[in-house]
Length: 68
Length: 542
Image 1 (cartoon, rainbow over the protein chains, first blue to last red):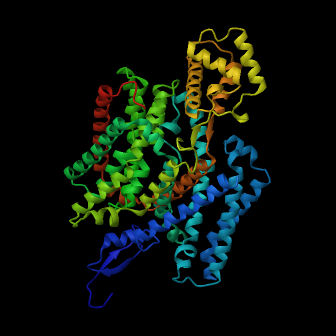
Image 2 (cartoon, rainbow over the protein chains, first blue to last red):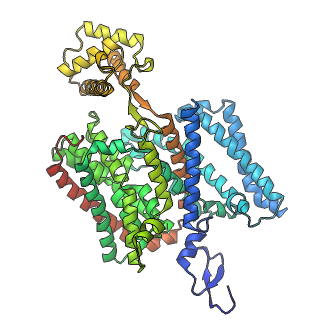
């Protein structure tokens, strides 16, 4: 964030555990959503989930069908 | 030193898991597992606890040797490790101890209460998982070491929705026929639009309305999770929706069978009504069995209508993505809705559904991995003792009270030692299969008649027939294993979801979502009641 941008202070957490300064124009909804995920975007999250599932499915097929 | 202190909880959890795994391996937990009816999962318990324990200890020790960075390894593995292990420990405790204990307590309270509280309140891993997370976060609070790991829960929940696709196949949908698909589609879309309209009327946030409409229209937890990203629903809103659906479903489980009986509905009509009107799969099954515990036709029809609702999921995601985009003033084109906004993980659901329909996991006509196989097979035969029992009963005239078709099925079972089609038709697979299935249905009818005391059969004879029916009902190991993974993903994800819900968030939502849910639920139940009575006759299946 540049110094020229206006900043606002918001509380973080219900227990009043602190506060942080964010840009006034920040998309708080997007920030809140991203704060609840280790991924930087929904798309990345979905693609990784899909890849993991396909790998899991492949391994299950190997051990329950193809190698049996 | 401070790094060791930070990693201590993970080390302790890892050590505890290893100890549990080793104790379980020694056989010391066998009697307790048998009491809890979890002895069949002991091998899995040992494997999981040892593997997770070792990973936890190795990861924690690795973390003590270096400062946390911003590499992908740090972001996705090392920093969330503590939280992931904590949620896994909670999931294991719920699945191997809390849920089985609930079933036992419920069974013991049944004589006093007259019903199984576990089933009525749906106290399975879904509800227990969310509750565990909510209780933790609103009492102790999310421990600092677990905060990053909790952020993995939504990702894992999406994996659960993707794996859900493997449980269904197009063949089941085809059984229902176009006519009934339209019926289900009408109610799914109708409910979605009704809730959206109510949301507008009560001036509720778009995200809450969107996710509630999917939950009420399609089906419970999976629909809520699937739609949440397109309507930007918060964790509290998702939990609220799940809570509303499950609570409404509990009332339906009691009310539906009573009204169905008073209205004189046939098994097929009630199955269609329950499958359309009740929102959660487990509650649909419970209501169908409460209506008619003897004839499985009700349950079969209810479950097929239920599957059809679930398969509308991708359609509803598209509808809500369009609605949300328009409501938030975005300019939308076909490309932006279908390609940019459509969640990729729903495509994953469709990929697995497609693979399942192609017969990759089990015969294409499977339902949740179960299928009927009446081909000649040693494993499908009754035991020699059972055959003796049936043959003696036949000679003694014990089957004289059966109908002609039932008697034919029993006679053929004695002749062929298993349920099968006609030997002469064995080259024509379709005819052989349909004759075998018809005989299986007749034998199930014999068991039902014996249960209803319409026919007198000895316990040994009933047991032999039951076994013969069981032997042709095969379970696909692939689908069963994929389902197990799905349940673990959901358990993990729902605990993490619960941990993101604070008292403040729930109270902020107020009571309006429940009001909307109840109005929509009652409207759907009432309308579908009249439509089913009017349009659904005895033959609804192809």
